[in-house]
Every structure is written in structure tokens, then in C-alpha cells.
Length: 393
Image 1 (spheres, helix red, strand yellow):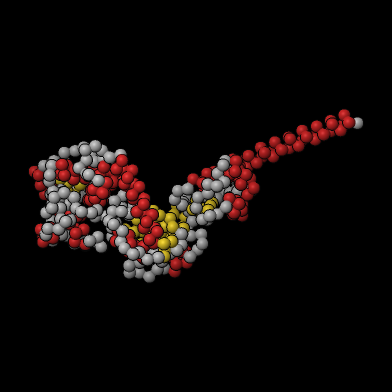
Image 2 (cartoon, helix red, strand yellow):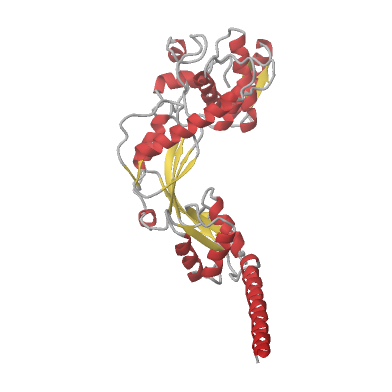
């Protein structure tokens, strides 16, 4: 009898083990195999959300077939504590493993309703965008200029949604005053700004924020990011540059940023100004003069006057030697890198070439010919001639 009991127990254990193995194999296939959703899904991870809450949400919206298997798989991958706040687009048939990777990798949110403040050189805009699941692309739904337009109701309602993404996007080359004015226009932010941050100290980038985020705290985050970028790039700078401090490199980067809108030209533009400093020539660049006129508050929507070019100010690089005393805008990382890794050239001049870029010259004769070509282009376009320039475009 005992032999029969032992035999039956052994048989039962084998069946149990086979069943367990089959269950594990099935669960593994469910976790790693193609998902059940036939459409793209926008997966949102709320600030401070637990894996349990996220797994329930995913199961409810049909992104995963089992919240339990999803949690178990995330635990097995050792990623259960790595959730990153944001909204993430996952394609049709995405596996649970793919979703775990998406919501723990972080990075910019890629789907959902988004209200975005764009801080630009020539003005600000607040816009509403939504992701089209069929294309995976954001589509603009509404936009307004906070300086002279009423905020559309659609944007107001969207900003109040608990799952809406709020973003501040700061363009390269904006001034610190422009950033502060832009943040004041964003009704989904809170708090006062005691003073405008130092020019050049803020990192142009895209910042995802929560509703009610404090403006001063956001500015501090922007400043910390710029400080980190500058320190990293300064550490890796080329040998023999005519800058004694990272702050001087930042000033140069801001000039490069304002001088060209063509990304590939930045190292060439930087080489012109570096060559001028090395030879003891004045920089002779309009953007510094303009900053001396405006103080970084707004845009000068006219050409420089002869009196402004002749006036001696710390920012008039036609009249003073070396760099101006401060940056003239907030440069992006690419401009900082160009200032610290300029091209090796013998260029001393540049001027607009009519294509959006610049013609670079090695001597005054070449430059005067390039200026003449540009003046002819202006004449043909019916545009007023710019002020005479040396190092400026």
C-alpha cells in the first residue's frame, strides 16, 4: 500500500511540476511575445505612481493581458522601482517587456495631450498638441500668442486635465529676460521671479513640468543644467583658445549663437572671432551692439543707426577691444561646443550670402567683394542696405 501511495504521490508531483513549467512557459510567452492591443497605446506614468497602479491601468486600457504577469516580469527584470514619470507611445502588438522598457527608460514624453510654452527669440506662443495614435505624430490643435491674444478655452481645459503633459521649450539664443517673460505668461506655472537670471546662465532645452510648478525653481533647474553643460564642455576644450575662464567661453558661444542660424556654420563663425582675438582685432559684431541697445529686453526691429555704431559702450565691439562683459543671450550646447572647438581656418570676416548662410573671407579684399555681392542681393530684393560690417554677417 505504501508503495502505491508513494507512486501516486510521485506521479502527482510530476504532474504538478509539468503544470508549473507549462504555466511559467506560458507566462514568459505572454510577457515577451506580441501583445494583444491592435492599436498604438499611450501609456502614462503619473508622478510617484507605483508599479501596481500602473499595471492595473495598463490592464484596464487593454495594453497588457495580465497586470500580475506584467508586475512579475518587471520584478524579474529588476525594473519595478525604475518607473519614469511621463507619457509613452507604444506601438500595436507591443509586448509587456517592451512596455516595461519604455516606461523605465525615461526621456521626453512621446504621446498624450500636451500644452507647451514656446519661448522664442521673436516672441512666445502657447500651443495645444495631441498625439494621433494612427501616425504616432503630434498634431497641433490650438495656438495663441500670450502677449496679445486671449487663451483659447481648449488650451485652458487641456492644461487642467490631470493627465495632460505640460512643457516649456526654450529656444537657443533667447535672452534671460525673454525666458522670464515667457514663464510669466504660462498660467499653469506658479510663483514669482525675484530677478532676471544672469545672461547666458540658462540652458535652452525642453522641460517637462507639473501643473503649478514654481517658476523660480524651474529657472534654477535651467541654470544648473547650463552650468553642467559648460563645465563638461570646458573640460574637453581645445588647447590654446583665447579664453581664460569658462565664462569667457560662454560669452563667445552667445555671440556665435546670435550670428548664425545655420548649425553647421557655428564652428566656422567661432573660428573667425577666435582668429580676430588672437590677432588683436576687434570683434566688430552687430549682435553685441544690439544687446547694448536693448539690454536683452525684446527685439530691435530695425537696422542699427550710425550713432549706435559710433557710441562707445561695453557691448559695442566696433569701438572696444576683446569680448563684451557678459553673454548676449543663452547659447545652446552646440554653440558652446563650437566656441570651445572652433574650426581651424584663417578666416577673419563673414557676411550673409543670400542663402541663409554666410560667405567667409581671409582678407579685407575678399570680404569687400562678398559684401558687394550681398548689397546687390539686397538691392534686387528691394531691401534697405545694412550697416557696413567687418566681422559681422
